Length: 149
Image 1 (cartoon, rainbow, N blue to C red):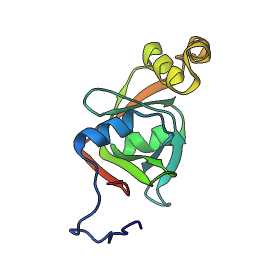
Image 2 (image 1 turned 180 degrees about the horizontal axis):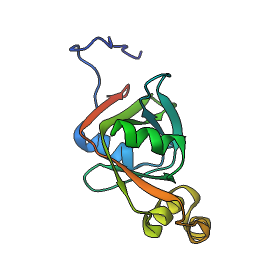
Image 3 (image 1 turned 135 degrees about the vertical axis):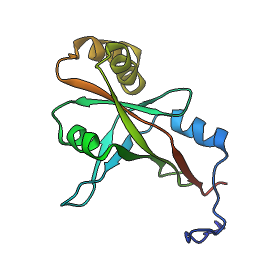
Image 4 (image 1 turned 180 degrees about the vertical axis):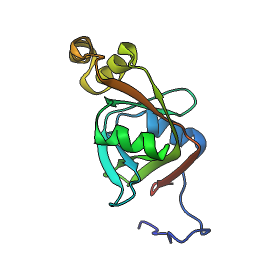
């Protein structure tokens, strides 16, 4: 039987170890990027991503998109990945964001991560850097949960 633990702050939760959370984040998931906005509920959108050795998340988007504009204004975001089957689990990162110029190598790495080497390389080659930006969500705070834990 699965032990359901209370979600109240300060109570014991089946959290992942730092290593488990990093490995989970490096698995292929569609992430959900959430950013605050002043007059509406937060914007939360599914997005492809890559992660570096520090655990920071890299996403690419159009500079003129609503999410890019909101990220610039807020300066911070939450990024979450989850597993829905075989024991629910998630890793959620809260942190400041920085913007980098478009980088075809990063864009291609993200495309290959989701589409495989052949199709991802083609997708990356056909992507244009015009109007693109790379956003880094820094892993200032990491939360995790694993029913298997």
